[in-house]
Image (cartoon, rainbow, N blue to C red; front, side, top):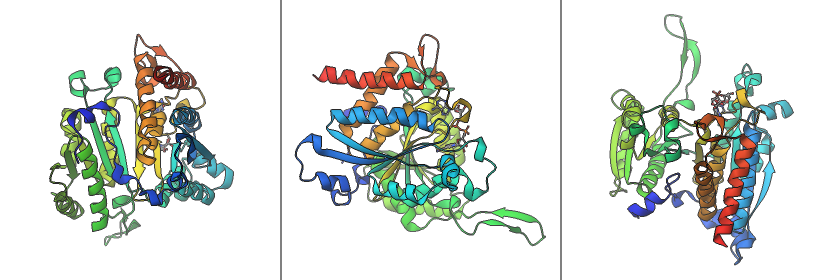
Length: 407
Ligand SMILES: NC(=O)c1ccc[n+]([C@@H]2O[C@H](COP(=O)([O-])OP(=O)(O)OC[C@H]3O[C@@H](n4cnc5c(N)ncnc54)[C@H](O)[C@@H]3O)[C@@H](O)[C@H]2O)c1
């Protein structure tokens, strides 16, 4: 099923709704609870909040309030459970992902994460780093598909470091494989080679099921966008990439309506800054996706604006801004909360299937930007500089004004 061209253009921020990623109703606890209910008021979801470190608590606090308001307008109630994670969990209980946190996350309908990490824990051993907790969380939730939209909003086109004519209208989605490849492949480690010299080594490896499932997510995503999928690999050099390409081509037979192309990763890195408008949906492995999704996000020029969704075949999705804990501006009311607010919108749309509530949030963000409110990271002359809290209040006012409009 292909969305019509007009419907695909309606939502510039998140133009797709991959229903294939939603669990069947039988697997969604809150849906089961609601199955017999007929009134909107009875919808209730449990959300695990992981504020984390640095600016994490500041941006999560804003996103939580926005979720509550937008949800209430759609008859949705949330049970929030806030759990420690990252550096704050290390300080509290000595591990970056306490068992209780993972358990709570697994039991909930969706997980909203702020950010983790900071100078204080930088020198910790690997298993005691905040970032290790994040990898454990993704693994524990079995979220293998990471969706990262990079959309240049007309209001922020000047924030891009690319020329206006190159950046204007960019609207792409990077689908990154998240739980396989060289970040997890074995063998890995340190050793010595035959000359007795020290070496470090990792393994890039993908099994059929891993490529097939991420390829399907990507084809479905492309199908609901503009029907174009570019698979990025290094098949001219790496056997793992040759295999990746073989499987993507095999899965393409299930999606004859999607136009598939292939690109080597070095060329893709170049094309993203030369002519990013050529891309609709990109699918790639873990390490290339890590790099390319960061590069794509910089086309928008605003790290504080970019949300992400990590989804599995079943179980709750993990929603988080792409930025880190920004220790340089933590506790100064300078953080841009919009990436987390938009992550909350992705949570509603992709995690819970609550598209109307998501739309309320997306509209409120656009409205707030249209009114000229800007945090420092996206500020330009002629706009109104605000802090994290005030930006949050303005978004809430915009969500509220939609009520007035509706009434
Ligand atoms: N998913 C995550 O939680 C995640 C992701 C990346 C980095 N990190 C961790 O975050 C810490 C800091 O990393 P970093 O400095 O490389 O990346 P960062 O994203 O935290 O910050 C990079 C720059 O962008 C700015 N910035 C980031 N988010 C912003 C926002 N919402 N509003 C305004 N400005 C914002 C920061 O002030 C900084 O100048 C490290 O410990 C790193 O490991 C965590």
